Length: 265
Image 1 (cartoon, rainbow, N blue to C red):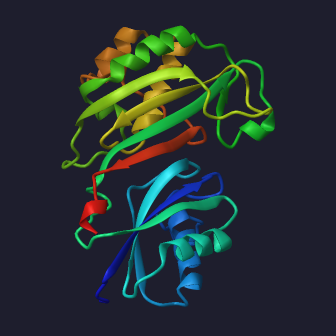
Image 2 (cartoon, rainbow, N blue to C red):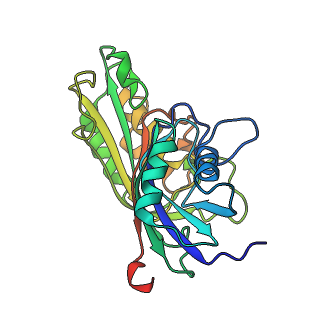
């Protein structure tokens, strides 16, 4: 095993439409695979290791994803940033590169993550919006969805908002904030004027959690669920079990907040 002596924090953005998530998978395109293939070219096959802050599902995008690079020789952050953006695919870009100390842990240092789920409903929108926004053709009661979204805030049993948890999975989790607001993040001529975003923040998330939360909110918007059903589901009550996972297109990792680390480098 190589002895790593230099460590760098890299922030990237990506459109996840054509990838099977962050995690490498045999014979399937992944964000991690694209990053490592690019670094092999930049570093001339010198040994290195990369570790991401979390997994993402297939087709999920990110405005702010963080990974750590381990190498044996010092790099110039500005040059590495330039080379990354020169060689990465067009749907992945590097935002920043900075050194971190040896004891930095990319997974444990991720203090909060904020996800956005973009959606619209009614009249079919321009096809160009489809890689980033989920569309539902039937009408939704957005005001009821907004009221329901706030019920997610606080400490809850999220057994109904994940799939196939292990015996060691901690299902009691705190959601720091959750709300549905009018979309002012994604703008453009092809983005529906009446579009919305579910904004949710926590220290961490279970597998499919945000997508299943969004599915429950869609059920409330359609009138199939009551707000009481959602409240019951947060106690682990199987009567209001969430049966569906909302599509991955629409979900974006918006921001990753890390513990302080710059003063230790």
